Image (cartoon, rainbow, N blue to C red):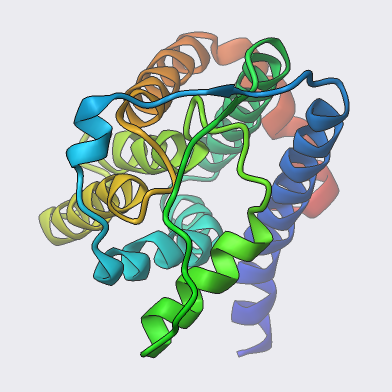
Length: 219
């Protein structure tokens, strides 16, 4: 049992360090920004606010640590490549945030008639003032998880279907709880696809970092 716990602690620790790195880069990007540009159009205005989508939106934060463990369990070198890709997406997104900071108009939650509205209010409060919407990291990372799970025959059909459905719901949730507009979601998806294939083709970087991480964390 102890060995099993230690086995899963390694990808969890590395994932936590990657998230901390991403958040640090994000905070630094905010310091270099000018006033954000308001984005959104008539299509975005017609998209309804559906409180139930706060559930998949929140699940993303759990998957941020669960998905790397799933990838690690299946293929440790893929796990290393995932960490590189995740951090690369974050870095490129933050460069865009500095060059083109954005904001959107979202509904104000005053009453909290149930737990879902309470959760939404907490998320909105934490993410205030709302900025750095374009591209959406929620959508980018969700797309990244789909791409990794769909690789070859490493994962069974059930895992693939569940991963795809959950992450499609997460992408939709960014629009349906008004945390992002359509262009944010599209740009996040495209960013993930581009960075994913660039890193996948460059095996040298993955191999070098994998050797270093495997020595440090002994996996």
